[in-house]
Amino acid sequence: MIQLHQVSFAYQDLSVLERASFRLERGEFGFLVGDSGAGKTTLLKLLYRELAPTEGSLSVLGQSLADLTSSTLPFFRRKIGVVFQDWKLVETKTVEQNLAIPQKLIGTKHRILRENVNNLLHQMGLVHHKDALPTKISSNEKQRLAIARAIINSPLLLLADQPTETLDPELTLEMLSLFDALNFQGATVLVATSDPELPEKFIRAKNASPKRVFKLKDGCITT
Amino acid sequence: MRYKIQNLFTHIGRTGLNNLLSLIALAFFTVLLNTFLFIHTSVYKELDLKETVPALVAFANDTVVEKDARVFADQIQKKDDILYIDYISKEENYNRAEKQFGSLGSLIKDRVANSNPFPASLEIYVNSANGSRKRLEEIAFEIESNDEIDDVVLTGQGILTDLFHQTNRMTIASISITILLTFLIIRAAVLKTAQNRHEEIQYLDLIGATRGHLRIPFFIQGIFLGFCGTILGLTCFYLLYCLLTFQLGTLEFLPYYQLISIVVAGVIIGLFAGIFAQRKYFKLFRNAM
Image (cartoon, rainbow over all chains, first blue to last red; front, top):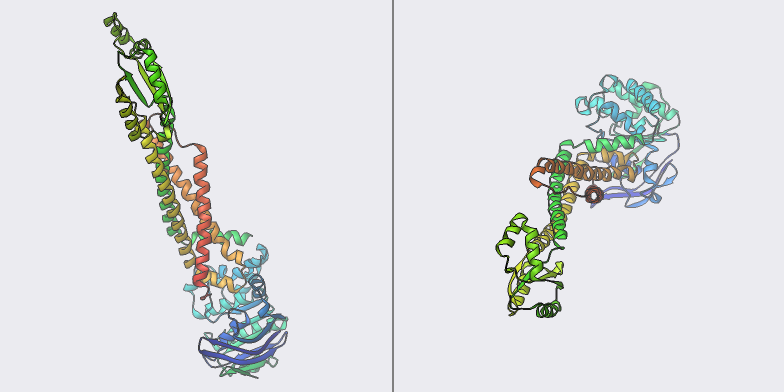
């Protein structure tokens, strides 16, 4: 499902990943743990092909990323849900409109779209803010909106970049449970976090099944 | 499809004021262009009418008999730029004067009953393309230097030809300037909209929007601005024409083919401006995306 083989990446002279390798099988739930600046976001960007590695090979959803062209890349990305670290909410659109963008992009019928959007608004506790602009809601709510937007298309792969950073402990576990449910339905999930205790806390609190944990340090990945 | 259409409208509506100002600027330049085209068309029509009138009239001396005058006419007809020459006898000019002056003509005829004061004349038709006032004056001077000729007068066709050439140059210049300005205005408006939508475009790109999905709104906005700008400009120009009809007299409005050409040109320029704007935008922001 996700396979990194000897992947290196550098921003000009600054090396971020050095011959990093790991494998996450289809339907697995993994945590990518690393300190701030360790390269978690860079690694996720490599996975959804926002960045290209300077060395090594990557394969995601059975697709070698080196083989992607500008015409096949959009269709590859549609299979992936991403919770961006900076949320990337469209500030000129309401909460409801923001949530509808991924569904509209894949051409979901209007009636189904409304149903999916309403369900997620309820599930995320955003229904009262559905007509508000992202600038008028709290960081916590923005985070929930970003998560909702990433999962609305039921992606085959969910990549979440520090999705619980601004959430309180209770809501953090709530959101991880949501990812777990998505994983249970068959999606592969990779959550990047700077909290090394988070996987353990989640498994203990929710009595969840064991998860894969990848540690990212000095540009290398260890399990 | 529904989203694509919605996306187009939100794209255009994003910088509403910017687009509105662009439309006003485009309309203004369209009105200016139309004014030049209008003047050009009017002068052209006038010149077309004037082509049935001789550019020069040379009056022969009374001592010159018809045979000599015709020989002389044949000689000068060989000169460059002269199309042909009509010989008008004294009698014909005498009759023309009577017709031309109506009742006053009869009065004149009565007063000069025993003699014909009108001279024979040569009506000289000149190739209108080269019939500038300066050239006509040169021809007139050359003809007047002959003993057979008493006087040569210019009928005004030279001035009209000069005016036509001037309006020709001005119209070509105004068309070029309008094309350039229209292109720059639309390109700037589309780029501004793109910059305002940058976050959204960046997000759409990351979640799997295709090239067409991201780029088509740029082209459509360019076409929209080109179309609406020229339509607005033509409407304003037509209103101005209606307001000033009493001063313009019998001058006709621009022909349909010109109106349609202006709108089509606006649309094409808009499309190209949109294409260039998106190319510049994606070049500028490729690193940020």
